Length: 182
Image 1 (cartoon, rainbow, N blue to C red):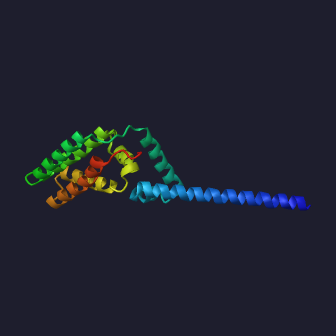
Image 2: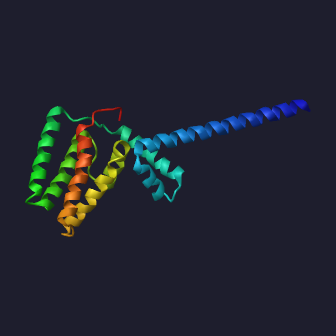
């Protein structure tokens, strides 16, 4: 009889250790996802009605897709050329703010394409960028939204100025990022 009690105690201890190990691994994964995706982590959790498991699975899927992309840093020549083009776009803002915002969007997309990001679909761009640029992704969303208002002539000059600021945040990050294992 005491043998069965010891066997039961050992089984319970093993199950408890496995549960604790599983919990610790889940917490570690959650922490890593939060660090990697920044504010995008909470946005995706909210989008999934606070179902963290579903949200984290989507983020893991994004990481998997991103790992299959051939993302590369820009050459020094490309960085210099894009930086010069950005200055030109900013200078045009004074006389044609709506046009400058459209150009800023096109310039960000061009940098993304040269770096190796697919650029056909805006939502897919957001998904792909979220893996390495979660902290600046809201800037891109906001700039894109303002660009839509500008296309419908519903944006003020201040809105357009804000769009430029938002585009610049992602532009600078894409321009100067080197290959860091991403």
